[in-house]
Image 1: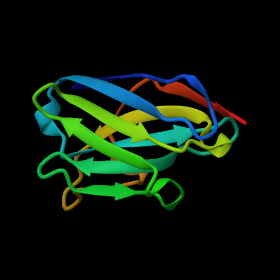
Image 2: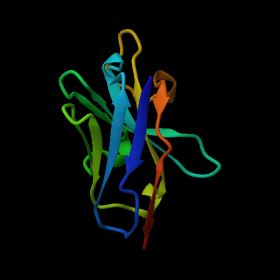
Image 3: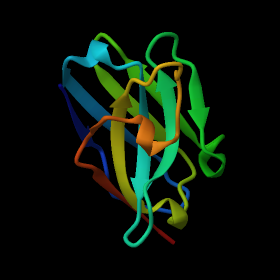
Length: 126
């Protein structure tokens, strides 16, 4: 089992930056990739960024590419996402997730993830 816990969510103004963290514990070496997802009420959970635990290879969703950077500290078992130039449409509950599917090293598909955190709220106002 893997336990995940997000932190760093806040209310910010458009154009500002924020960094989210996700601490992991348990059998983290059973997972191959980790990701950040977000969800707003009434909509499905969407993938934001993913990282391969092996070599740090990353994958981003179009709306955040160039503004968000996913990174990891494997020694500390912590996942990060640095978010710059935040926009009101980035407002959502952000979740970190971890998974292992044969042949997959990165994914923005939530069905490829087995373990989920409880989420941290990011609110961006104009």
